[in-house]
Image (cartoon, rainbow, N blue to C red; front, top):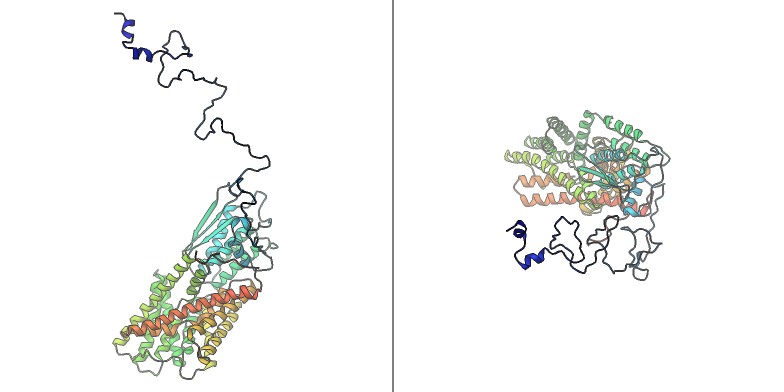
Length: 564
């Protein structure tokens, strides 16, 4: 048998599998013309290949499906264009009342203009006017974002509210032509994002705030810088802005350390007189507060957290009050301890935390209020430890002792409130030009509180809320008059309203194993603190909404719905 016979198929099925289909010619005479199951069946016409490959995919339109070409006048569609299937009779894209017109005049403070635009969607914000603060190639986007972050860091570290920090960051970006910016502020993190257009990649930068120091002089300088940047008539380049910002960081505090220690003593002494103490009580409370301040500075130099600093600073006033009681001195130990507590209560952080919550920044508000809670717990531990040992030693501390005396002395108490506000302003490192105004604002607050509570027999919570509202109203008016922050005019003025006596009686009740009475007093202290914070914020809002002095047409709310 030959080789050809060996390769010959032995069955009809095998022989038919190797027969080429009709209509297909072999490519070469000497090559095999075998095929496979992928071969074209008989009767199927094969189009002639062209110059290019005609491969397609599952997204190609099938043959026989007619698609109408788009009209010539229709532009290229995008996410913001109206679909072709809609008509004017089917849908309406304009609200029934029309689109609200937002007027942003240039003679209003930049805070109001920036807040108004931040509440608007990006597509509805008015385009910024062209500025000549950069070369023809456009603004240096990374440097502008870095400048806005550095300014926001100084404001947030100084105790400014999250809404005002966002407004300042947005004002800096907009002043250099970056209108599509979105700042984001939390308790410790600042971020800003800029998107040039819908097709370009966004640029995002962030910065972390690690240290906080209340320096209202630096805060006022930062506000002045932002005001100059927002003014079209003032040409401030990036280099000039960086130079002024570096000077703010290098500048020393306006008051030395010994002045701060004396201010803490004056604050505690004035607070003790405010609750009915005499000259000896004033001296004892001032000595305890100054000793606590020095111990807190020592702990800070050792690197201890602020929680332990507050705990250590609260022990000397309480110890002096207990020692005077054990010595059977004719003084009010409760007034001494209450005066020391006034110098430690974190009123600034409390007002800022409640303000952030009322304006919609709930994460930052929660963090600030948690910080206040930690500070308060530190004060409680320090005072409660001293009171416990004093009770064990036989100190006659009476929780029912009435502060203020049976016959209030209005003139002496007004003088004490003025001294307390003055000392608080020095502790906050305020500008010397603002100290007089904030001192008078604190005196007015105490006059309102005394007239309502002592004369009108109104509840202390309501009296405190109204007095704090007056402080916020006057502070906002003064801030608008000077185009500055309202914090220097309000924070120190609420000092006479802080709940020092309610806090002391609550701690004393717990130390004497009268938990119910102690918790009742502490609850009253919390209610007074919330009344102060809400009253200050409400007074500020009243000045914006009703007085219309230097305000924009309307500031949009944080939410357009009511919880749904």
